[in-house]
Amino acid sequence: MIGIDTNILVRFLVADDTKQANKTYRLFKKVEDEKTELFVSSLVILELIWVLESPYEFERSDILDSISQLKINAYI
Image (cartoon, rainbow, N blue to C red; front, side):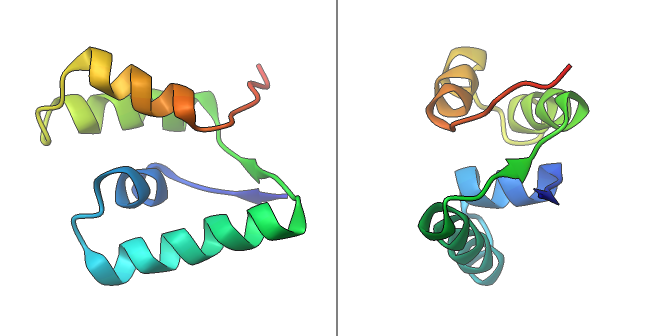
């Protein structure tokens, strides 16, 4: 299982860097096609919320909506 960091999720959700966003989309598509999973730690989710809320100034409700659309299984 591949672990991903906050940067990958930010690129996927914000797509502010076309080259990096395209790489992320390809990774997500490959994982979907192969029916495999990515590991996302709870710390990465917390950092994602902070990054989207602070530097990007997204509303908390929009952030939570975006995260809920990702198929994430929590392992605590």
